[in-house]
Length: 215
Image 1 (cartoon, rainbow, N blue to C red):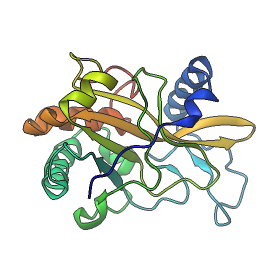
Image 2: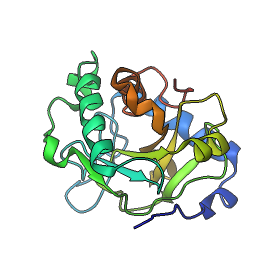
Image 3: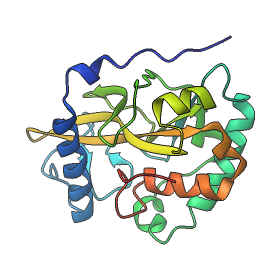
């Protein structure tokens, strides 16, 4: 059955300048390796955890969800290539410190279908592609959107193979922080698992700036 991405209404609520500040702030906080809410009991609900690559206390293993449009390839094939690329991404030097102490199971690492997909009309580095602000972040650290060429040309632009934005934001200590990355990827990128692995490393925060242009 064809699945179409609903429009992202939050783009009309949060301005690009605000989201840019959130993304920059989230990356800066993650670099400190400190939990801003370390005095709280994390068992009751989700809290920001900047010492972890998973970013929130309610996640115990790395999971990604993937959205495929009606013309963006067979979902099972997409999942297989993503797992291959993720295996390559896990070889990054920063993997052990960010994710090494958490579980990783290929059977659950890539889930077909995201809980509230929202594809933006046009991409920029401040874009929201997901539910946005939430007090109950999903299990998915990365939300992957696989775009057929016409959709990728419209959203990413004709020369861009991939781009990263924000899928979910969480409020902590009066501030908002990105806790899930949205990775928008052109379908043809899946022919090159090494290049896709580079995109995943950036989306997972294993590169200096996860919001930088990908590709």
